[in-house]
Image (cartoon, rainbow, N blue to C red; front, top):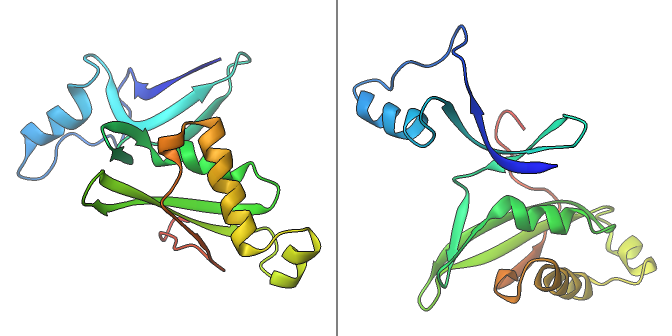
Length: 158
Protein backbone atom coordinates (compact mmCIF):
# COMPACT_ATOMS: atom_id res chain seq x y z
CA UNK A 1 0.00 0.00 0.00
CA UNK A 2 1.59 3.22 -1.16
CA UNK A 3 0.46 6.69 -2.26
CA UNK A 4 2.23 9.26 -4.40
CA UNK A 5 2.34 11.07 -7.73
CA UNK A 6 1.18 9.29 -10.88
CA UNK A 7 4.10 9.31 -13.34
CA UNK A 8 4.49 7.44 -16.61
CA UNK A 9 7.86 6.03 -17.66
CA UNK A 10 7.31 5.55 -21.40
CA UNK A 11 5.82 7.64 -24.17
CA UNK A 12 2.53 6.62 -25.75
CA UNK A 13 0.76 7.47 -29.01
CA UNK A 14 -1.10 10.75 -28.74
CA UNK A 15 1.03 12.01 -25.85
CA UNK A 16 1.41 15.78 -25.66
CA UNK A 17 4.83 16.93 -26.82
CA UNK A 18 4.64 20.64 -26.09
CA UNK A 19 2.41 23.54 -25.10
CA UNK A 20 1.73 25.88 -28.02
CA UNK A 21 4.17 28.82 -27.89
CA UNK A 22 5.47 27.75 -24.46
CA UNK A 23 7.69 24.65 -24.70
CA UNK A 24 9.63 25.68 -21.59
CA UNK A 25 6.40 25.56 -19.55
CA UNK A 26 5.66 22.07 -20.90
CA UNK A 27 9.10 20.85 -19.79
CA UNK A 28 8.79 22.48 -16.34
CA UNK A 29 5.26 21.19 -15.75
CA UNK A 30 5.45 17.61 -17.01
CA UNK A 31 9.09 16.51 -17.27
CA UNK A 32 11.09 18.41 -14.65
CA UNK A 33 9.29 17.37 -11.41
CA UNK A 34 10.31 13.70 -11.82
CA UNK A 35 13.24 13.42 -14.26
CA UNK A 36 12.86 10.50 -16.64
CA UNK A 37 9.09 10.34 -16.10
CA UNK A 38 6.03 12.15 -17.43
CA UNK A 39 4.25 13.74 -14.44
CA UNK A 40 0.46 13.61 -14.95
CA UNK A 41 -0.39 15.99 -12.10
CA UNK A 42 -2.54 13.37 -10.39
CA UNK A 43 -2.14 11.64 -7.06
CA UNK A 44 -2.50 7.88 -6.94
CA UNK A 45 -2.88 5.12 -4.36
CA UNK A 46 -1.64 1.59 -5.13
CA UNK A 47 -2.97 -1.28 -3.03
CA UNK A 48 -0.87 -4.25 -1.96
CA UNK A 49 -2.69 -6.26 -4.68
CA UNK A 50 -1.44 -3.83 -7.36
CA UNK A 51 -4.68 -1.93 -8.03
CA UNK A 52 -4.46 1.81 -8.66
CA UNK A 53 -6.90 4.44 -7.42
CA UNK A 54 -6.60 8.06 -8.55
CA UNK A 55 -6.91 10.35 -5.54
CA UNK A 56 -7.25 13.70 -7.30
CA UNK A 57 -5.22 16.52 -8.75
CA UNK A 58 -2.05 17.31 -6.83
CA UNK A 59 -2.32 20.98 -7.80
CA UNK A 60 -5.65 21.38 -5.95
CA UNK A 61 -3.84 22.66 -2.88
CA UNK A 62 -5.08 25.12 -0.29
CA UNK A 63 -2.55 26.95 1.90
CA UNK A 64 -4.13 27.65 5.29
CA UNK A 65 -1.88 29.48 7.75
CA UNK A 66 1.19 27.84 6.20
CA UNK A 67 -0.36 24.35 6.12
CA UNK A 68 -0.60 23.02 2.56
CA UNK A 69 -3.42 20.57 2.09
CA UNK A 70 -5.12 18.94 -0.86
CA UNK A 71 -8.85 19.42 -1.29
CA UNK A 72 -9.26 15.72 -2.15
CA UNK A 73 -7.98 14.75 1.31
CA UNK A 74 -10.81 16.63 3.03
CA UNK A 75 -13.42 15.49 0.49
CA UNK A 76 -12.41 11.88 1.09
CA UNK A 77 -13.04 12.18 4.85
CA UNK A 78 -16.41 13.88 4.30
CA UNK A 79 -17.53 11.39 1.64
CA UNK A 80 -17.05 8.48 4.04
CA UNK A 81 -19.81 9.86 6.30
CA UNK A 82 -22.98 7.78 5.85
CA UNK A 83 -25.19 10.87 5.37
CA UNK A 84 -23.06 12.43 2.59
CA UNK A 85 -23.49 11.59 -1.10
CA UNK A 86 -20.65 13.81 -2.38
CA UNK A 87 -18.72 16.93 -1.49
CA UNK A 88 -16.46 19.66 -2.81
CA UNK A 89 -13.90 21.82 -1.02
CA UNK A 90 -12.72 25.17 -2.33
CA UNK A 91 -10.38 27.84 -1.04
CA UNK A 92 -11.21 31.51 -0.76
CA UNK A 93 -9.08 34.57 0.12
CA UNK A 94 -8.82 35.08 3.90
CA UNK A 95 -7.27 38.22 5.43
CA UNK A 96 -5.56 36.43 8.33
CA UNK A 97 -4.94 32.82 7.17
CA UNK A 98 -4.14 33.59 3.53
CA UNK A 99 -6.75 31.11 2.35
CA UNK A 100 -9.85 29.81 4.04
CA UNK A 101 -11.76 26.65 3.27
CA UNK A 102 -15.40 26.19 2.32
CA UNK A 103 -17.10 22.79 2.18
CA UNK A 104 -20.21 22.15 0.10
CA UNK A 105 -21.86 18.78 0.38
CA UNK A 106 -24.90 16.97 -0.89
CA UNK A 107 -26.69 14.72 1.61
CA UNK A 108 -27.53 11.12 0.64
CA UNK A 109 -31.19 12.08 0.52
CA UNK A 110 -31.74 15.77 -0.10
CA UNK A 111 -35.14 15.80 1.61
CA UNK A 112 -34.77 17.64 4.93
CA UNK A 113 -37.60 15.49 6.34
CA UNK A 114 -35.60 12.32 5.69
CA UNK A 115 -32.49 13.93 7.22
CA UNK A 116 -34.54 14.67 10.35
CA UNK A 117 -35.66 11.03 10.55
CA UNK A 118 -32.01 10.03 10.79
CA UNK A 119 -31.48 12.52 13.61
CA UNK A 120 -29.80 15.25 11.54
CA UNK A 121 -30.60 18.84 10.84
CA UNK A 122 -28.49 20.68 8.29
CA UNK A 123 -26.72 22.48 11.14
CA UNK A 124 -26.03 19.34 13.19
CA UNK A 125 -24.69 17.46 10.18
CA UNK A 126 -22.46 20.42 9.23
CA UNK A 127 -21.10 20.55 12.80
CA UNK A 128 -20.50 16.79 12.81
CA UNK A 129 -18.57 17.00 9.53
CA UNK A 130 -16.37 19.81 10.89
CA UNK A 131 -15.61 17.71 13.97
CA UNK A 132 -14.90 14.64 11.83
CA UNK A 133 -12.39 16.59 9.71
CA UNK A 134 -10.74 17.98 12.87
CA UNK A 135 -10.31 14.46 14.28
CA UNK A 136 -9.28 12.61 11.09
CA UNK A 137 -6.92 15.25 9.66
CA UNK A 138 -6.27 18.20 11.99
CA UNK A 139 -8.07 21.10 13.66
CA UNK A 140 -6.74 23.57 11.07
CA UNK A 141 -8.28 21.43 8.30
CA UNK A 142 -11.86 22.07 9.45
CA UNK A 143 -13.68 24.36 7.01
CA UNK A 144 -14.72 27.88 7.95
CA UNK A 145 -18.01 27.48 6.13
CA UNK A 146 -20.15 24.42 5.49
CA UNK A 147 -22.94 24.55 2.94
CA UNK A 148 -25.61 21.94 2.25
CA UNK A 149 -26.55 21.90 -1.41
CA UNK A 150 -28.88 19.99 -3.70
CA UNK A 151 -26.23 19.60 -6.42
CA UNK A 152 -22.56 20.29 -6.96
CA UNK A 153 -21.18 21.94 -10.09
CA UNK A 154 -19.67 19.51 -12.56
CA UNK A 155 -17.32 19.78 -15.48
CA UNK A 156 -18.51 18.38 -18.80
CA UNK A 157 -16.64 15.16 -18.02
CA UNK A 158 -18.41 14.78 -14.69
